[in-house]
Amino acid sequence: MNKSFNFSKQKARELSLEEKVGQLFMPAAFINDSEEEILKLESLIRNAHIGGICFFHSRASAATNYEGKKEIPFNEDSYAALKSLIKRYQLAAQIPLLIAIDAEWGLAMRIENTPCYPYALTLGAMSDAKDLVYEVGRRIGADCRAAGIHWNFAPVADINNNPDNPVIGYRSFGSDKKQVGDYALAFTLGMQSQGVLSSAKHFPGHGDTATDSHLGIPIIDKTRSQLKENELLPFQQLISSGVDSVMIGHLAIPSLSGDSSTPATLSDSIIKGLLRAEMGFDGVVVSDALNMHAVSKLFQEKGELEYQAFTAGIDLFCFSENPLEGIRKICDKGKLEAIEDSFQRIWQLKSKSIPKDALVKPGLSDPHTINLEIAKKSLTRIGPISNQFKDTVNQITGIQIGPVPQNLFFEQLSQTGKLNEISVDYQTATIRAAKITDKDKILLALFPPSVKPTGNFGFSESTIQFINDLLAHAEVTVCLFGNPYFLNLLNLQPHHSALIAYQQFDEFQTIAAAYFLGQYEAPGKLPVQLKWQRHEKI
View 1: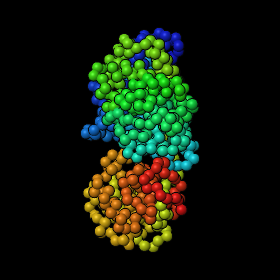
View 2 (view 1 turned 120 degrees about the vertical axis):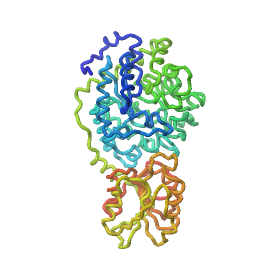
View 3 (view 1 turned 90 degrees about the vertical axis):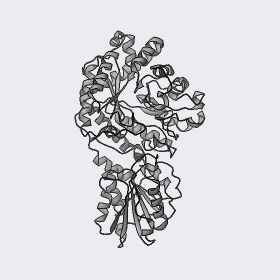
View 4 (view 1 turned 180 degrees about the vertical axis):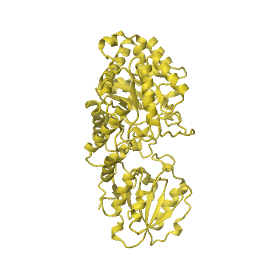
């Protein structure tokens, strides 16, 4: 790529209408793609004057494989493949591309063997930890830059207040509007310190939905005043503090748009009225991925979706599946003044971010130390103080349910000589509570296969029933390495204790074990409301 490209006003004036409209399009690029598809994208970039690309793992990843029927390939060299592809695609571009990715918890969200940081919900379990959240954002930003990425579509500014939300949940900082705003801003500032562009998503708020917008259109039946008092507050905070872009969610909000069938992506009253006029945002408005079923099925004619989104106020079309047709329609039918406004916003982002490529430091971050610190500060206890290993001479029965590559948690506790571990097949729940006496003290380590609530977080109904049988028949302490909403599936009673460690990382298992050995407290707080909240810490 020519790093000395001049993003001047004069250069902008020299571009044709087609070149300017091409700059508004950001099709998907896949790290693990065939040579045939790579050549097609190179040709599109070269001939359609595409402005940017957004990287996804593969064509079988969640970005395109909503039904989960395709097997996702594993490529331990994905990071090297990404860097190689960025060079190829930049060479195909006459105007340097903006390179984007979703890296909410690090490059590991899309790329194997790259730094992985905790989910936003885990960060939300820490009190007064804006400095740590800033540092996570800074490190992720540095990793993006090292990879050749200019734009991280983060942070999630949604307030997650629906336990059945199938798509946000763990990606949100929690259900407290002030903390969501504060932590989203800290994360943004951390990224921006590394010259990485930010994006507040998914406006006007995807947290209170039970429908996945990848599959259908969620409808939010809240009044305008209710939204202003809650969902919109983190977005306003980010806008007032200089977030680079706002991503519009594919959400129907009748109180804002006037009907229950128009997604925010296609609503000028939401984008031009609420976001721009009322909330004062003058930066780039990005669509959520246009291949998502909430919008991709709305129009028969190719390019019409992009055109309608443009007329509603979208500046940049992420994951446009029909860029050639979209460019043609906007050139033919779009208002010249609106085209120029959107182009200038994109041009300004490029002039702000791309020249900083020359300052990139090689190498990726090491997340171990900060992940250990986050594990200590997020560890959350519910109910009575758990049975500490240091205070008992009796055997404690350890039962692990769920897949985990290495159970460091039980390995460290077994060194006390007080742990009697029982193996359970989590898919079939092959032992029953009848084999456990009411005198047994049980430490139940839960590793849910999925962080999403759909399908009992990956557990079968029989496994959930097995866990509840244990809770009913024995003295059980639960240690959960996963989404705290999982506890809503359990018949927990006031006498039960639960420790939430949030992640399955080695660092979180180590800190959880240290807690049971009496070496650490559990200072964290629940970032969301659970059905089982009848307690105070003691």
